[in-house]
Figure 1 (cartoon, rainbow, N blue to C red):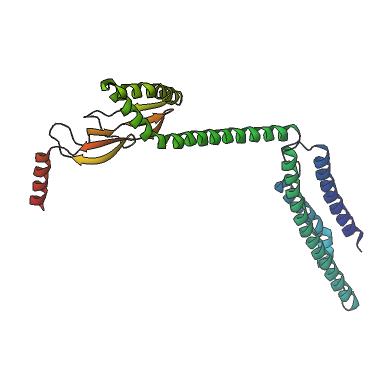
Figure 2: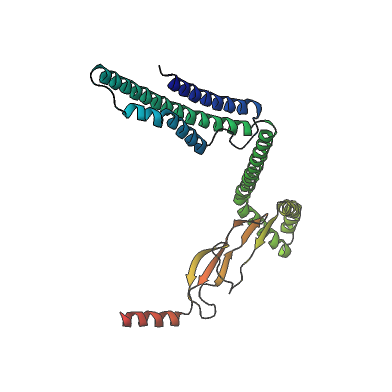
Length: 275
């Protein structure tokens, strides 16, 4: 083999071995370095260009190869030598391409190792602690929401009983004789029930005639025309609403005004005439 070509191959292999050693040393000795220590793609392209230039024949060799050669056996030797050099150059280029692929893969592995090292040690502990605190806050919020939902669902079926009990106690004012004794006996129970409801932050609310209809707090049970109350306003309340802890427990049942009957008839007549 040609000593010059052998020297170039050895130089190329040595350079690539140094790059691989540099990458391994960075992974072992500096696991917390965030910036990539492996050669950048630009550096790899420069190295590839240098190696390819080394693989190209020099001007002297080219001149010697293109120079005049004697006829006969000398011509055959020159062609054979030229073909051998070309084959050697193609083999070197194939080796360079293979090494470039391996270097690119090694660089990706190195970046992945750096990402894993970033999550290790103190930084990894802080990240784990932050994730744990975030999950704890989310779980607490969900539990609080479920607890509030459970309280509302438990209190909602008791509202008819609370209303009927309150209505019976309101009749105690006009009772006399035995009925008064019965109301007096149950008044203590009603007082205790009222205290429990206050502790649970159960509060009733009413809707007066003329209040604007709010679909979030009112439930429409009927719509009637009215000359006194404007359209889409509360005409009458049929059942009071309740809130519990600031959350709506039950909407107030109301009758909603549809506006003046005369105005509605005039609007209908105008629509029919225009059609």
